[in-house]
Length: 321
Image (cartoon, rainbow, N blue to C red):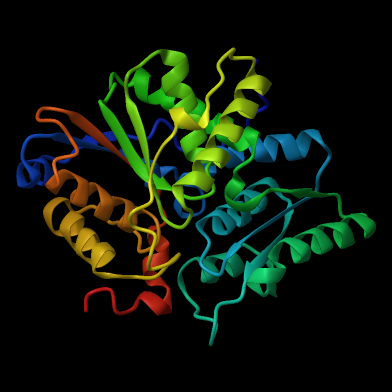
């Protein structure tokens, strides 16, 4: 069953070889899927999800998109851009960071795209989100609520289609590795591998959640997405691969792991990563490669989920230190 979908992203995104990093690591063929190049609002993986989520919103008669995230949320920036493209209003419930609110990056673009920003404490995020939604509904503004990260079954369906896109480009890697957080991207990719019957290992590098929690989230989203699309596939937590060995510093905390990975990819391939998601995932990839996780000759695809505009947020000004 095909779900309603809008045309918001520049697709298909290219798959590129990374020969210099492959040579540096030795033994593997490293590719990158460039979902940082999806176009709308600076690109990133959420644009794929928003093609389906915004279509669902329009089908429900919505005039406004409401969602939530961190102060430098890539998802919120892309939601604001989608709302602007579609002539809809947008409200963003952002978690206020400790200390001063750092500008630039995604936060600058939220305002540029015309989103209304509501700040809240982290412990009040969900309550504030629902209060904002209810107030907009009572005011007759016809809001549509998009969950954190766009990770609903509808959002996950976007990455089932992304997996099919990869197959159509003639690539069936041994391993797909990427940043995983709210679970929708991983749910769709895992579902795609299962439906296509591939032996591809779909490995999410968690940027914040323990593996036990993230596996439950991903498997639930995958099952619900499969049900909506009538795919006849059901994934369990045992089918979901998550590495949570890199979450200890906390969400968005820049360490030598991320700094080194960002420099490594930039200076060897001219490829830009972000400090929160792809930087941590690439750091995990490099660490796993050096520890022998990948077999000699394996084709490994790094799925670049975007987020590079966060590099220009003031709190990451020391990225080269």
